[in-house]
Amino acid sequence: MAVSYNALAQSLARSSCFIPKSYCVRDSKQISRSNVVFASNDNNNIALQAKVDNLLDRIKWDDKGLAVAIAQNVDTGAVLMQGFVNREALSTTISSRKATFFSRSRSTLWTKGETSNNFINILDVYIDCDRDSIIYLGTPDGPTCHTGEETCYYTSVFDQLNNDEPSGNKLALTTLYSLESIISKRKEESTVPQEGKPSWTRRLLTDDALLCSKIREEADELCRTLEDNEEVSRTPSEMADVLYHAMVLLSKRGVKMEDVLEVLRKRFSQSGIEEKQNRTK
Image (tube, rainbow, N blue to C red; front, side, top):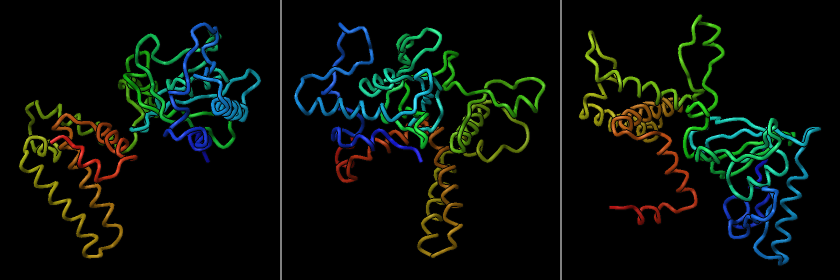
């Protein structure tokens, strides 16, 4: 079971993650980038530093003082990159909320985005059950890979084994984002004349009335699984239909699922009533 720093350090502050920014400042006069410098030396801040140190002490660093750190997109679940961290790098990540690693080749800390501005903004940090690997959970400001790809993982081993020639970059996508990718391809193809019967997705993409009618129809069928007490297996089936047709509409509107999930995440700490009142008319 993974353990969250956020869960372990809830007593540090009431902030949703890590140490409140108001408690930490960067001391430009100090050589080490990883030191957390508190705004004052009162007992509360000393206690905060002690708890951070205690968390770092619990990591099982290897014989070189390192541990593996994986950056993951909090909204899409995409694995963005892997690096190594030492105590200072993890401390810097906690205080700055920017994904920071340790370069083994240069023997120095580096923050992802310090040259490209494609930072990974950290919302939480998780450690695994053995306490020897770490997940940085956050939102990227842009492509993570130096090649310009969204993530550093875009080469499928099975594709390489099954084909003589690589078929191009293929991001490691979850089921939901694989579907989004397929819909996006159908959207691109819909602008090109086609012979024969078009696919269902292409028909939906080129007929707004049909698309909207199907979303309403599938939503009604989903509700009927509850109202008519249908077999439980019918509910995920109808929900899959609703989700698919809704994602086609999102594609038509140029909206990504990542945008939708970001909205949901931001609503976690807000009541539904308050959220509706704050909506822009």
